[in-house]
Length: 300
Length: 319
Ligand SMILES: Cc1ncc(C[n+]2csc(CCOP(=O)(O)OP(=O)(O)O)c2C)c(N)n1
Ligand SMILES: [Mg+2]
Image 1: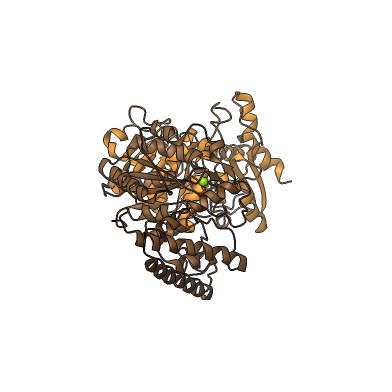
Image 2: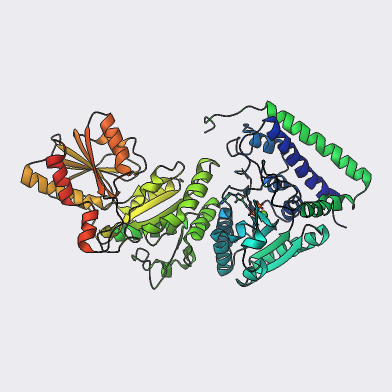
């Protein structure tokens, strides 16, 4: 029996956080931009359940709030970071897409972290630490030279890295199906990298797929690539009206929302308890974050 | 000692003292690097050498990732022209991890720069000034006046991501690290050295501020002008070339010539010149013309700075 309630709690935390961020922008509490991961929460949640925080590392993408909260479920610190406050993960200096906490770090250049992750995995191989690197990428990012070069290096050096490609079919407004030649599976397999396909439309199978991918990397000390078919149920960034998706596509995605599926697997009381608990947590986090101070550059 | 031997010695010391990793194309035996800097080392320390396919942006990033895990890493970029391919990793990754995330990173990208050898447009440039204004990283330049091996180990120790430029024409040269019968060599600062070459104890007529491969040209010009025009010159050679704030404090003449091999316009010389002019000194700059670097010998020489440019500047430039 899988821990559906626990997974739901983590996913719901991320969803509530992202909704609150959307409101935060309209209220003017936040500046800059943000990339919500509504609809994709389950990917980082399940992936982070497989990592060993002592020895493993994770590198992320611009769409990182879910990754951060799945790694370190501190909504207060992430809210502070988003508001530029001093209790943020990077003291408010990083903002939405420049976050480091513990063994997780990310950055705002798509694909750039894939090669950093490769280097971390190389260091682990050299140190014989037994750790692995979890590297998130997007379907748009997949075509960056960075990711392609990283895959080649990972395979050539046989380093312990697991790529999780969150394929939400779009890079901003650009449909990957139209702008990417061939398919990811053949391109990955051509480099002798173990490939697994999965989907957020079947969380049960996804959990098993992730488990087998992580097991493969740990046992073989070889790279693995998991392509997770998914859908983003919100705009690419704060101001996106999603005009590039058809009504039908949006509706279909909504009906396949993985959180709805998870809700069907837990009791109504569990669901309601979790919701109440998390909503309060998020409200508190944002209220406290609003009260927190900002740094200038004296933080150094 | 030859420049290249000191450099190789520094790399070997980093490997034996710090278990450093050396990443790059064709750096391993039997090749030993395009300029043979690592010749012989990979046979001795196979675990420390990571030979790569041609993927500069990826293996630069791989080095940064290793450095984030605490490893000491040098990446060799075969020709300085290709540092454009490392730019995103240096500027948007390493520099930000250092400055924004507070990461100490023992990470150096070494690369040979410079022309005068007919290598043509994409194998001759001195592009390092592109990186000099980037916060969170530093640019260090070798010269024959200070052991490049010592400079490399020092740069690695700082924990700041570094672009380390070596001039191609310097590799085979003997180092000038003691006084010779002409020059009085003084190290003006600790840490990243600033070297002064002087002729006497008198206040010189000119200060030439320069770095890297230009040192040889500056020395030749200064000698010539002493003999032919009785002009006395000092040459000031910083090694941390991305820090231009303090160099002015070491200049003793009223007339300053900034000499660089890269294109003069928008170059390093503008920074040095700004500080010199602000302090009431006169200043002129000499660098490459704004042109690609042609392969043909005559045309290449016309684009690049030369001894005559310095002579002309001293005799005519400050009137
Ligand atoms: C090198 C680079 N190019 C462009 C951008 C702007 N940008 C940010 S996210 C994005 C689309 C990314 O698509 P994908 O990799 O599929 O990830 P997703 O946004 O779908 O999660 C773009 C174009 C960027 N951040 N970095
Ligand atoms: Mg996408």
